[in-house]
Image (cartoon, rainbow, N blue to C red; front, side, top):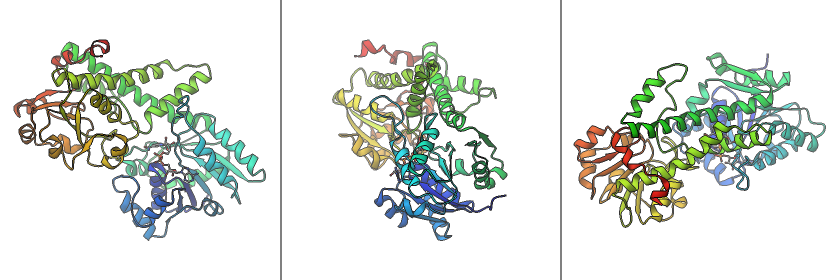
Length: 453
Ligand SMILES: NC(=O)c1ccc[n+]([C@@H]2O[C@H](COP(=O)([O-])OP(=O)(O)OC[C@H]3O[C@@H](n4cnc5c(N)ncnc54)[C@H](O)[C@@H]3O)[C@@H](O)[C@H]2O)c1
């Protein structure tokens, strides 16, 4: 049996790498996290987190103090002696064709290859298209023909906002390798989590790579499905919240990811759907359900804009819109593929002035949303506004003092794209209230794209 504590190097100090490094340290391993961004590493050494993730700062400082976690920019020095090197770098979509861009993964693999000593598992935790493990292996063998190495797939399923809990209590740990030594090492690394109840799924590398994409696409399909059901609810006078509860209680369906809203976004779903679509097309197996969901989700942002414009009485020109929430979901500062990045510029184009507030995302959002004024708090954003839009499901927006909000706005109109507010309470506070799929009156707000353009 492997010794419980392993020496591990993690490449990439982003949402996944930082959480992975800190959590692996907390279960007893000796971890070095490497990032090529010197400012990021200097900040981390000084206790400054480069991302917003609940509980991360305390975990990182605790593990540094315990001597189990260190940071460096020197990858070459961090590889020799490590039993496993986890690659946790970005895999954004390639602008030219939507394929996942493997440049960061391949660059990291090349640098690792140059410094290998004894047997090392190179663990690809970044989300990568099927076959990437083979490419990494070929590159490492070309650069370091004598190296004793196994390339392992170990996709990550953590959710931003609850990343530490997800890492420490995962639904499953997926390991893709045909190498017995690597499989034993991975089992040893994850033993504390496995013993605490997390099932270990060991399979071949390609199946492991596909599991990550297939899981994300399935969740995105669920969101897209309930959004379409919400549209139908608006036509027939049904409440999508009741419909979601009514179907979600069936354990074959499950209640999660049945929350109607402005469409999925974020750092993973949009890019992973595109990458899976491309993989299917490349192999002559187009994934039509995935392709349709992407198209439906893309169109959803325009539907939300039209909903807001109709709530404003047909035009937003010259009006001030208070936007509550900018990040793609609550609990993170991540702005990647956030709905706000599509919806807000379209409203600005139609002449709206936008004042926004987000509890964590304004720093990242500022440069991405030129012309949007950032307010220090919800009430500051709402003061004097002609219309308010709830765009992200931050708990503080659900707890908004509606009476005070209605009083402080120029016109009390609220478009709640997350169904956070109780419609009756909104009405009692004097709001003209619109939400997603909850009243027959919503139907009039959805107009065909042609009519609105
Ligand atoms: N963010 C999530 O919620 C999440 C969840 C599951 C899986 N993933 C996947 O994990 C991967 C990483 O995502 P992320 O959100 O953590 O990315 P990120 O952009 O936050 O972090 C990546 C980090 O890697 C660093 N980096 C890139 N190349 C490097 C190199 N050669 N050497 C050292 N450092 C290098 C970058 O400077 C950056 O700090 C992606 O493939 C993503 O799809 C993300």
